[in-house]
Length: 111
Length: 114
Image (cartoon, rainbow over the protein chains, first blue to last red):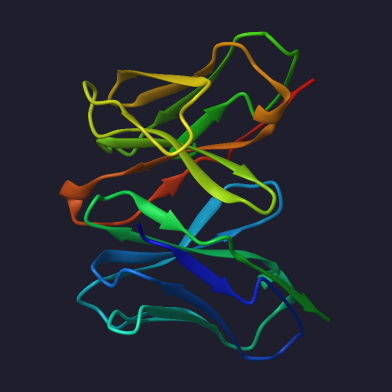
């Protein structure tokens, strides 16, 4: 059974810092990995989707990498802003086509 | 309009009542899912459907039922609500056939059972 772990569970940083959020998974036979953002009490917004054949994806200040062999993905946020404050979740989809979600990293960027 | 719409957005109901949460989508996706989210427990899959005639249980289906009325509609029912079903409920869609574009989530339904 796939297990997905996100470290750290919570992070507080000053505005302007570059930061890295981690997602690890136990079964490397994955189809894809997706990063989401969730604001308090709101739905999940897709940020980046990495197919199993890809190494990274970029969107604006966000960069996600994937290393299947080591069972890891990182989400890099450059020049963080207070508006980046949210919970970030990763979801790993395997052969069953049903994703397994991590519990998220709660990020606070303070001015 | 949102691609995935959930109704109601908020609902307070009494223990023992039957309640239905509805989800509709305009993305034309084949696959639809219901999740619940609880603090500290993350997202847990309740039911999923890969097409109109396909219904599958997720990891926490007890106490819930679903109906896939059409490709675009997937409803979740609590036959007799209990307080530990208080949670944030999400509907999601995906479509393998368009090339994998991942999941799209609705805005959620906050359900409180008193």
